[in-house]
Image (cartoon, rainbow, N blue to C red; front, side, top):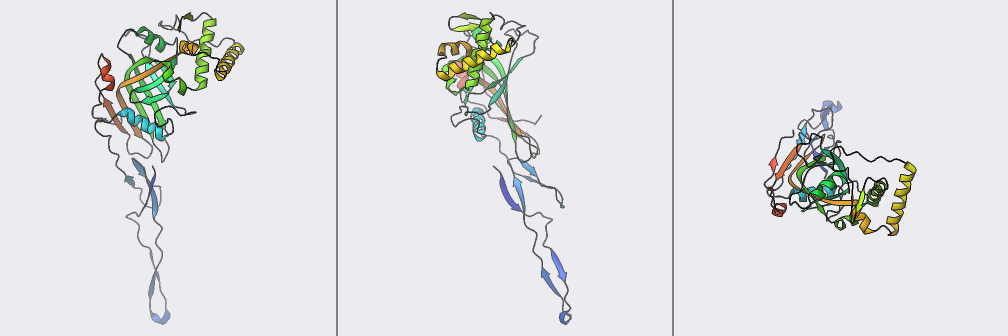
Length: 318
């Protein structure tokens, strides 16, 4: 929070002026009012004094590193709460633009020469268990998770979240991390998902099924091309028909006629569990960006998901 302190610079002096009066040959001096105190905003990091006639100076306030053994997911959630992105329990606030960039290997084959699969997804919930989001069934990430259902290992993933603004008097944050993601039941996050996300994912699956690009195999749709190295994105095609399908799906959702089974068949809920998280915070008024890193050991069983975090490392800004 912004703190205003009335400070007087060392160069400020009481202004004196001599007014010589010739009354009776005596001289007198009177004291003129001093200049008003300068209000200097002090932020979490540091700020530059406004340009004035005096020498420009800097005022510092110390930001202490997080406590030893602190949970970075808790700190991450606290920052998002302060920016009104989520509620106190870590669920997305209605209408909040709360997004996460994710990058996964193009395929399960580590020898693949394709660049990582990069996506921006909406965060639905942030808790000490991890970060929950959703992807469309048939996408590369959903298909890779499906292939790993029988494996205890999760799908490797890297994330990036940005918040704040790089403007004078404010600060911005970058949250970066590496970890594993796992499929979770859709019902855990479905109540928090925006209706436009549900509508667009279900409608897209319907259009793909119409074109034969996906097949219905009981509870799930599968896109035969989604797991290949050269999977192509699906084009809109006939825009008027696409619009009609989306509008019909939206009305079904609003009226309660869109079945839960079809939503499960179209949407994959995912939880990202980090084993490394990093926070970088600063702004134009900062002397340098502050940067911390947390790590915890990762194993082949589920015990590591609840393991305590090691003491944070303070890193150079670059």
